[in-house]
Structures are given as structure tokens and as C-alpha cells.
Amino acid sequence: MEILIQQAQVKDAAHIAPLIYDAIGDIAHRLTGETEEQAVLATLTELIKRTDNRHSYLYTYVAKQEDTLLGIAVLYDGLTAKELDANLAAWLQAKNASTIIDAEAHDDEFYIDTVCVTPHARGLGIGTKLLQFAKEQAIAKGYTKLSLNVELEKDKARALYERLGFTITEPWTIIDEPFHHMVKAL
Image 1: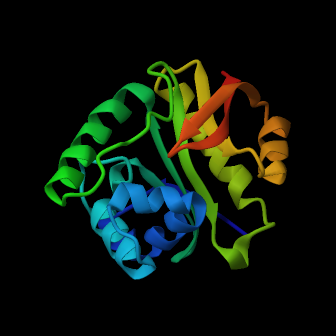
Image 2: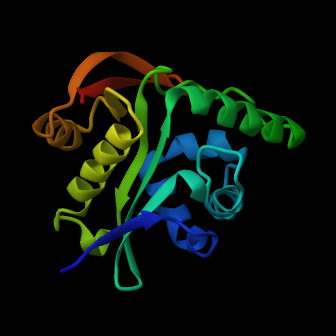
């Protein structure tokens, strides 16, 4: 099975949005200013098509087999995140939604915001391929640290990240929920 990982395109947005929602759950409500699932998905789709926020297709990579999307990774650096999140906060303010967007990485880290694999492709190593791709991107861009956050109760995910060389470096809070901040030295 040949898997190709490439930058997402605008036309992928409707397929990417449910995977982002699956991966980040309640955080999607805060980042879209929406409460109902269909509205969250529609707004995520809109955000993916734009170029000025953390979920833009410009920062999203897709794993595909032929034309079938199998998984996604949303990647950017901590410094760029500040600009992307300021844009998102301004957009949310215009919607009269909460503009509180928590930082998720340090400035000097290349950050894995989201990794998610479609339900039918789970267990095939796609997630590991996406994480390896993130590492390659970080190195190519000159970063010495790759980071991510994982919810405390996601033991299987944390174990996978540890097997891939990530270590817990500090506690982190995103929308008032506790996470482990994990870093892999490159």
C-alpha cells in the first residue's frame, strides 16, 4: 500500500474538517465559535479553505492512497502560531465569540497541532507515517524540537509518542483542560 503525504488543497477541506473535529473535540467549539456539530464542521471547512489560521490547508498535510484521504497532520511552528491565532481571535471577535485561544507550543518548537487517521485506516501505521513526516518537515525547516500536546487520559496515544522518542516536558492547559506537553529532540 503506497501512501503519499502532501500538502492539503482547498478541495480537501470537507474531508479534513471531520478529522480535525474528531481529534480536537471541544477545542473545535472554541476555535470556531460554534456549539452544534454541523456548524462546527461547516466553520472548520471554511477555516481550512482560508490562509490565515492554524487549520488552513497551508499548514495541513494529507495522507492519501490514490485519491482516498486516510489521515491528516496539521503542522506549524510556535512563533507562526501567534500570528495565526491573532488572526483567528480577530475573526472570532467579529462573530462575537470567545477570543481566548491558548498557546499550544513554545516559539522555538515545530508543533504537531493535530494528527488523525480515518476510522477505516486506523491500525495501518498511517499515524506513525504522519508523525515521521512531521519530524522530516521540522528538520527541513531547521528546528531542533518537535512538540505536541496529549490529553492526560489518552494513554495509548502517549505510549505511541513515547515509542517515537517524545518525552513529557511539562504540564499544559488548553481550554482549561490538562494536557502533557511532549517534545522530541531532533
